[in-house]
Image 1 (cartoon, rainbow, N blue to C red):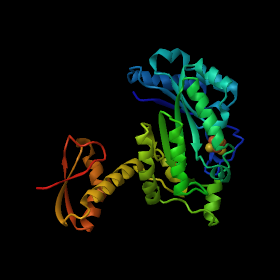
Image 2 (cartoon, protein in one colour):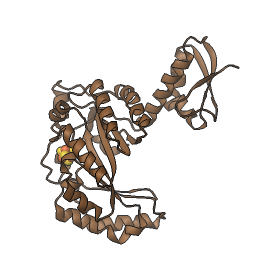
Image 3 (spheres, rainbow, N blue to C red):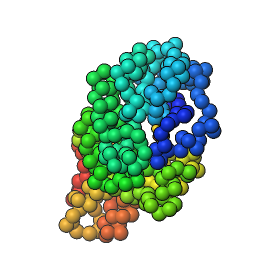
Length: 326
Ligand code: SF4
């Protein structure tokens, strides 16, 4: 059994974030009921449980939905309390205060993820987020002070964003010491404000390649700080593929990023080496990452004159690449 994710669309959200199509899909997305929550948890248990998995209420604005409805959903989890490792929710940074945190504690909510998206106030304002970087800092501190696990989410390639601003965002988020982060390159969904800006040539969405190159710089910022990256890129889904008009979407985005890191590191160790056949060693679990998605790294190195063979070397750590002299 894995985490049980329950999507809670935020009906009547007063915001209009540039990238969000909630307003377009609301009315088409049925409101999840307490009965559906119970049924989903019951079904999950039938496939086996070991108390390690969490009940996850996602949708981005859990603490902003009406309290009565929030209580109904949380109450539905109570009979399953002992079967799961608590609850995780995601919400907006400006929808956190002491009162709501105390309320969530009563329902065994253990992890709270905040959609920070950017730590640059101009980017937040241009994308109509309706909160500031200061709100992210305040909410993060409160969440940690109350003993919850903190998760932070950022986006890349928003309107007005730059690589420099994204790197600064990652550094500022890392300094808040969350347990986890999610990085989402912007995908332009049809009918959104970003879509309008894109179609009127006021906004140039990030390409997959640009997003990969940027994420290769963001990943080490979090990993060096011991922060787990639990998501890189939107989940592969037909919904996104059918609804998007542009942007950095790839169903295997994470693999592309990890492969690019290996390529970068391979190029560094190959610098100055004679062209021809070379053997590169990487840790046992990382051979496919060294080869790259659809062996793109091997093809790239071949174009540069290197006929690459890859070998496993259990002494090597993640991202380490060594040239073997044979
Ligand atoms: S992303 Fe923005 S507009 Fe969409 S539901 Fe969340 S707060 Fe509302």
